[in-house]
Length: 220
Image 1 (cartoon, rainbow, N blue to C red):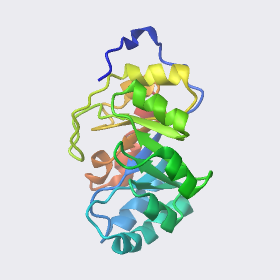
Image 2 (image 1 turned 90 degrees about the horizontal axis):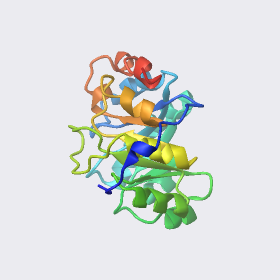
Image 3 (image 1 turned 30 degrees about the vertical axis):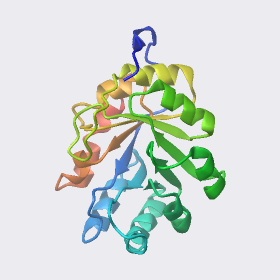
């Protein structure tokens, strides 16, 4: 983590609500499309990221088709994780790049100006500023908490969200082990979006799991 004192940066006054950015589980076949439909029906869900590893691109494109349609009907952004070629093939709304998944400028040249490009920046101010300068549409910090979805050695302080939001207009996403009970400090710190996976998909009632974030999304 960057050696930096974030305490001088007060959380910004919110001018817009914090929303949910859902990240898929590994298994997106079977009854998952119906579960996704229930989840994205909530007005506070703004984006859905298809994050499925180890599946051949043609098979993944077939799995993606009904999910993308559901997102379009709900006016929820459909984001592809890591794979610029798949994002282009699907005409997805965006692509999310990890630090080893390619350059923002190359992705922009491939996908065009309208596609949203997000970048994982872990706990690094430097990586976030580089992403912004390269033309990213949002930056993601985390993991803020232990996550059953993806292990991470990075543990940023919530203050990095305050720092970013105080200095830059580019949206920031908080990610990593976020539940309704852990979300409010991240919202108060300045997160524009909360990336959530297991807290929703691990529930039997996904609509109820999404609704459980309502108070936290207000920073309460």
